[in-house]
Structure formats: structure tokens, C-alpha cells
Image (cartoon, rainbow, N blue to C red):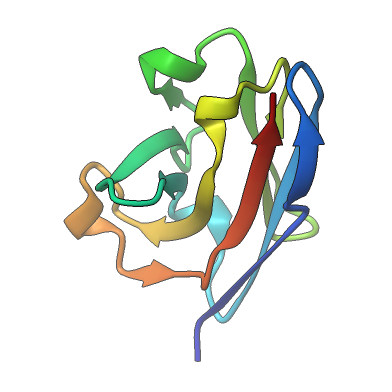
Length: 119
């Protein structure tokens, strides 16, 4: 059974940093994409960052230069380091894996972790 468990969300002031973690069981990030999506209240869920099995990364324009996605194969965990946070980064952040070239390709999802950035 595949399980993705996110952690690291919370309340932070604008300009601060958080690191999200996504630990997987039943599937290996080394053989699949790892992705972070986010959904703000009343908005659709959007890709934040993706890392392929080969290590290539993709970022949403809104987070380029501020967020970094990484992977630790030994821990089977994907991370999202978020720096210079803005109030508009407030959302529920979801970890996903699979063939995440699109949202539909992400077969497995975590339950999400809430990030709140205060101004």
C-alpha cells in the first residue's frame, strides 16, 4: 500500500522559511517523480515544483528562486525548502508521486499540510 505523509507546515511570518517533507512508503521516489502542489482557498490546485527520477527539477514561475525541491533516496523522502515566503504562498501543500508530467499523472497523493504566511 502506497502512503505519502507530509510534514513541516505551519504558521510563519512573511519573509520567513519553512521546509516541507514528504515521506513515502510502498513506492520509491528514486523511480518516480516527486511533486509538490498547492491549493489556496477558493482556487484550483497548482504545481509548485517537481523532481524527476533523474533529478531534473521544474518550478512554478511564482516560486522560482525562492523554493527548492530535493530528494533523499536513502530516506525515500522529498523536501520543499521554502524561503522568502509571501502571504500569497498560503495554501494547503500536497505531495504527489507517479508520472507527474501532469496532475492527472500523479497517481498517489498525500493528505496535505497547511502553510500559512502572515503579513
